[in-house]
Amino acid sequence: MPGFFTSIFQWISGLFFSKQAEIAVVGLQASGKTSFVNVITSGQWSEDVVPTVAFNFRKIRKGNVTMKIWDVAGQPKFRSMWERYCNGVDAIVFVVDSVDHDKFNTARFELHQLLGQPTLVGVPLLVLGNKNDLDGHVPVKELIRNLQLDKISDRPVSCYSCSMKSQHNLDIVLQWLAGRSH
Ligand SMILES: Nc1nc2c(ncn2[C@@H]2O[C@H](COP(=O)(O)OP(=O)(O)OP(=O)(O)O)[C@@H](O)[C@H]2O)c(=O)[nH]1
Ligand SMILES: [Mg+2]
Image 1 (spheres, protein in one colour):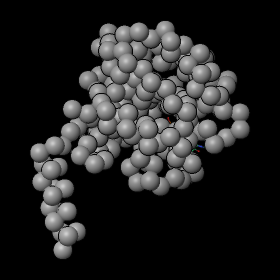
Image 2 (cartoon, rainbow, N blue to C red; image 1 turned 135 degrees about the vertical axis):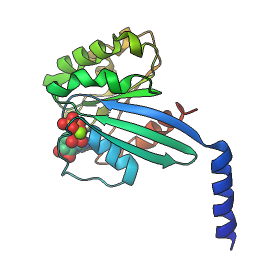
Image 3 (tube, rainbow, N blue to C red; image 1 turned 120 degrees about the vertical axis):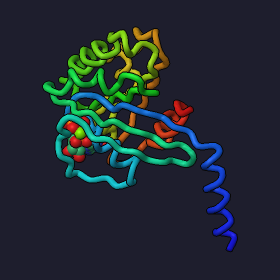
């Protein structure tokens, strides 16, 4: 019976205190965007993820926060779509494969190109250095340097090292996202 009253209380407080956050997840192909969305949605890690074509849309509820998430494809032919999905969101999540050193230059170029769009001025940015379960991953400090995140001054910027596979740091990532809700 106490469980019943707790559920009723949670339902009622959800009605009065519910918040929303709309989030766009972008980054180069195979950086782990879909894995990120899968893990935070279902808590399930899987090696078998197919490359995204165009985009996936997911809606999830974490506590009293409902998140609408655009998981946008990262292959070159889809990158011109990123701006459209980032326009009007509460946060942009840019996922980087922190082991794939050869792609840091391209990631930096695409990120700064995106942030240079007049429609996206001021939108908060979260950069995730993913795959830190693997040897050779770069730490946050190096990622900040490689992606020139210190040159971004027109919006709040955060950067975390994480792993979708081990779920390392996903708690602080979710906290950061919940902090963008309104
Ligand atoms: N070891 C490890 N592998 C990961 C991690 N996250 C994702 N992967 C793997 O990286 C590959 C690409 O993951 P996806 O989630 O499909 O990447 P994506 O960014 O959505 O790729 P596109 O949809 O093509 O843009 C898959 O084989 C995943 O299993 C991680 O944290 N650690
Ligand atoms: Mg994908």
